[in-house]
Image (cartoon, rainbow, N blue to C red; front, side, top):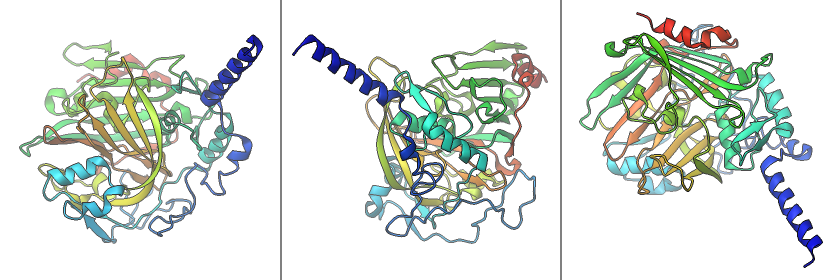
Length: 451
């Protein structure tokens, strides 16, 4: 083989690799959006069994009983009854549509069951988000081995994803409203003895500069702030995190405020597998909303798409005013959780060689209609299934925007579980305006925590 031939082959291989990393879809492929695919990239048609319906635009009309401007949203499907239930006795019949975590819970806990309801494809987004998604399809690119994305703004970046990193970017930037305030969120732990403990309570504030079409600073994906009001020992504490759009240009930033010290300190350790104080250490920082942060510690492999039974349209759980109706010993009250059959993208993430994390493997199940992670299976260093998790998604029909803010994990080894970022009767306020930049300063965090 001549030197010229070798050089040409090498150049060709390099070009192919660059294309694999950087290429957006072609204009021809993007034409699938709005035809065979929905405007966010889901399959528009229903399934052949008729158990998943055709997508017709999602739920954008509030049901009777909803008060305009209210943070609490009535269940539009409150009158429906389960089609059937799945438990340890009949789980084999449905095994291919259950996550490994769901099956493990059925095997471990007598009485754990999944009540399956009619599937409603309720996820819906504003027209301007859909318009931007169409533009992103041919302009968004990823780089740095898939860790960063460029060229996308105010829409789903990769509606026709080609790899696991792109699916995860779609999730991390999924539209849940431009700004969210949960005025009285709570986090609850239930230990192996069945004792229920309030581990955190406070105000959750989050906004998404990525979705501000007039933003001058386009370097920030989202900002989140927690001001704790309970339990009493935590009253006044505060945390603030800023996640960048491009991790090659910027890094995550975090600050903490402790009333006893009366000062704000940088908290660079609030990332990856650092224990999450909101759950009293029952989860990691990057467990919040089932995954957040940088994708550099895992290889995210796109397995494909599957039909799975997952929690969906969980209004009953999300907005209940009685935690005692939800939090049972061993597992969440099955009567409070609605499950439906949906198509999900499966992304299998394995810890990279040389990287460290308490989870050696994480399998994510990402809803095709909203791009939210709905479920995850997480494995310990021995490869044993350890912490399966679920997010409890509702469609905020008044925005419109899907939300998976309420989420939690089961600890199969300890026999405990938790539920975090739960709005309950205080509801979720979702707006279209960012807070001013001054409200995201460390001084502002200290001011909110002063008692």
